[in-house]
Each structure stands twice: as C-alpha cells, then as structure tokens.
Length: 453
Ligand SMILES: *Cc1c(COP(=O)(O)O)cnc(C)c1O
Image (cartoon, rainbow, N blue to C red; front, side):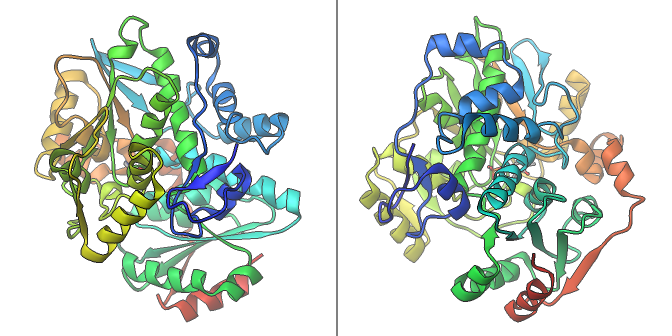
C-alpha cells in the first residue's frame, strides 16, 4: 500500500515512511492510495475478535511493509496498557443511546488508542534501523501526556514535550511530569502554547540540527493515528444490535477533525455506518463549515473542553481531498486561499453523511447534570458536547473521549460529586519532575543537545 499527499506534489511512500515523516514535504497529509473494502463476510468474521486482534486484522491492510507477525505483536502490546478488558467498552445508557468509552488507556483520554500504537511503531523502527530517535512536541494538555505514555521507557527513544507553565491542568501536568521515566522530559516553558509552537517550527526548520539528533514530531496529522482510531468505530459497530447497526449515528466531540475522519474513512471502506455528528464546543469552525459552507478561522476562546479549543482543524484537509475525488490541485487552491485570507467559501459544500452541532460553555454544566440525573452516568466536559443536540429519531453512539476524573472541577461544580480514578490518585503522591525553560529556540535546542539519546 502506497501513501499519497493531499497536495499531490511529493512522491508516494510506504506505510513506515509515511508514519516516520508525519506531515508530507509539500505541506499535505498522507492518505492511502486506495481504500481497502470490507465485505459483509469480512465483518461477520470480525464479530468474534477481541480488540487487539480486530486492530491487527484492520491495520494489516495498511501497514503492508511490516511483517504480519511483527505487526500483530506491536498491536497486541499497544493495548495491554488499557485498564478495561473490553479496551473500548460500549455502554447502553437507554434504548437507542450508547456511549463508547475511549478513556481506559494510561492517560484516560482517547488519544491513547493512537499514541500507544505510534510509540510501539517508533520503537520498532529504532530497533530495525539501529538508530535512536528524539521526539519533540508542544501540547496544551492531552496530546503531550498521551505521547509521553506511548514512549515511556522505550529503549533508543527520548521524548521532549513543551507546555506553557501553569496553563495546563494540574492533573495533566502530573501525567507528563510524574512518570519517573529517564527518557521523558516535561519542559514547562515561560511563554504561551503558540510561542512554544513557534520555537518548535524554528527547530524543525534547522535541517542540520534535526538530522543530527534524528528529531521527530508528535503530530496530530500522522496517518497511523487516524487509522488506529478507525478500529474502535468498527469494534463498536460490531457490538451494536444487528437490527439497528446501520441506522446508528456516531456523535464525535471534535477539535482537529481526526477522530471523526477516522470513522468516516471506515464508512468509505464499505462498513455501513449511517452518519456522523461533528460535535464542537464554542470554538466552532467546523460547525460553521457544516452549516454554512464557509471555512473561516476566528480567535480561540478557552473553554471547559480545552482539548477541543482549536483554531484550524488540520485533518479536514483529508476529508476535502477525498470529497473532491482526489483532485490535489483543488486542495492546494483551497488551502492556499485559506492560508492567505483566513477563510474559504465553498459553493456546494459536500457534507456527505456528516452534520454538526455546537455546545457553549454555558451549556456544558447543565448537560453534565442532566445526563447524570437521567442515566446515573458522569460525562467529562468534552463528551458532554456530544450530548448537546442528540437526534431523536435514530440510535446514537456518543464517543466518550476522556474520563470525567481528568476534569474534577467542572464535574464538582455541575453535580457536586468528585469523580476519581486510581491512576490519577496515585500520581498525586509522586514527585513532579519538570524542567523550567525559556520559550526561545536557543534554550530548547540547548536542552535537547544535553539530553538527546
Ligand atoms: C483531542 C481531544 C478531542 C478532539 O479530538 P480531535 O481528534 O482533535 O477531533 C476531544 N476530546 C478529548 C478529551 C481530546 O483529548
């Protein structure tokens, strides 16, 4: 299987290279050249598989340059770190309403599904090529923690995560800075998240430094992340009652569009998923796109669902590419106009089977309260956004993207109960090891020079 860039100006690459490169050199995102199709017979065969086996059966169609037995092991290893035997348990709240719990991984948010696997893929490449790798990224919270836990203690790797000091939640900071692992460096910088991003860009732009330390980016656009996430849609689909499977809508709390894209791609592979609801918080670029056909940036207003506080949804480019039939010139035109003017108005925006909803901060506590009163179930503020405009005329699966225990303040103020998780409680008694750094590229570069593997 070869991978093409959505901008069409780079050579196709194999799976392992697409994973190692992340963002394509022409600025585009990698997609498989063709989407494999799953037949009804395949789906029947998949019904009895456990999570890791299903993931292997799915990924082997994409990761064709990794020997199957190696891939099977890497996948199996990736889901041993999950605390629930179901990995992604589907819970029925009432007739026709389900939540898919995606928060049983080591950092209690759905990003573990992709980053546990990505960590193992990186580890495999290191040992195969007998090279070390230094992973570098900036985070406003969940991604950094999940990336760190994907590489924790892996030989031949080190991970450096920048975050704005004092501006991630105390629990998120502990997930990054209390691991005790010698290859993890939580770098609390004195600037904002955007300042950290700017310095990272500068460091990655320095080709000599980048090659010397074999730097790799933690990247929200890595194709392996998207594919790993398609698997839980398939897993959930196969656990729905057979009679209503094809009528069920998936509701996806969304920021970068990665999660919802993963489900939509599965539908394009012949799995009869009915439709998707793109559930945004008050930072609603995607809601505006799906309701007006205009894709336009606006300022980010920090919200109670911080992991969805994005200005631009980078994975939308993959949806666009497939929506225009793989016309890379059209994608370049849209992205260029978007970059230079801050927006793009589509004439006839192809929504396909997607619709959108929006949820403001003013609504979130009320939703948490009402879900708790109706079903005795506690949702985190991101998942709450999925409950904002549930369809009445069809079954829904809401993706629960984080554990409520990660956001105790919001939950306490909504229902007066403090949700707890044993892994987070354990973190509270461990020493914080963070490195205070200036945000400029020189300071960060100096730190990497001292600590790189
Ligand atoms: C990252 C994140 C999201 C948004 O996911 P995207 O793939 O960016 O759409 C939603 N909820 C939580 C808890 C997250 O960490």
